[in-house]
Length: 259
Image (cartoon, rainbow, N blue to C red; front, top):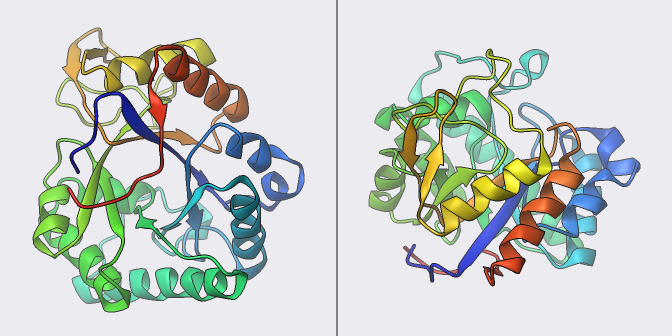
């Protein structure tokens, strides 16, 4: 997706925890972001959380996307599974379709799809898996933007499958020297200091080097920047990121169009 260097989408994974839906956390996040990725019954989420999150997103006028993951709730979809391409495609289709049906009932539509957790990380380096995700979404519709890790082959796989794509980077995660995300098994994988997350987001948008966990400079560029809804103090992080970008005259705008 070709976007102005002064424009970026801020996305956040939501609908994963009923408590966050009910206690105002999600609505606090929605005041800062422009897109939400809603868990749709795989790693998390159910009909109630999907509908409630969609309704919240509509009130705050943020774009709505599906966030399908491995149907492994015990591990929150963050453990790599070895499923066949057919199994992955079927699961992705079922999850995206479920969210789409609820969205339609609310008078909303899905604008994008972003895989979750281990499914996302595996697909970033496994083109067969990325193709299976694309197949599952395509069985539902190709009229959405597919979100994938910037610099990874999954974006090209999605593009070759006929989708518009958006390259994603992370404000609240550290990077390895090869541009991959620092594994969550390490205690320093997350950036929990709001101002630090804001600085990292700004460096991404401006096309500067991002400092990885081991002080290696990694060049990261993106169309959309993620803030995880389950990161500690996520609303404060989102507010800091949005504030830092706006102060630098960066326009925050939801994804739209082909790339």
